[in-house]
Length: 222
Image (cartoon, rainbow, N blue to C red):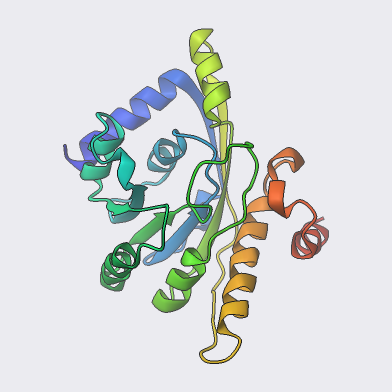
């Protein structure tokens, strides 16, 4: 399946089953960029494909979906990098970096897997690593309404789910070499996650709800 065909199908289906509000996508820089989104449910990828009007997407998808009739087809259409989410998949990271050096729009979820609590989990440092290595600006994407539980309940009642995707301001991640690098990676990861959290309703903020950096960002934005 070609990417344009996939995107047309995704947009058609999403308009049938959901009312999707997209905010701030005009903030996306032209050229190379890394989108870091929270991961609530199986529709997250579809929402991003719905919202992003570009065909140079680089996407990492859990390899368990490789043979899935729907998500496998979506992954093949975007030539996804299949990622082992249960361990440090250095082979996948190298492949992602190779593609990023050629240019494009990278889409990834820092949490690595869907949240069972329907709120933010602690972010993994892979996204900060990719951002610092590539030099791509990071745009935080905050998703709500894609929780599997609520989407399934709405489908059973023939109701459309209300889904919202908000793009934050782009920023650059810089990680110094040498001593203190790991701590800097953790701080950069927390920065990415807190910038996602600041555009989420309070109940979705989870692990970062009381994070000092989030409180700073919320105060600056008020």
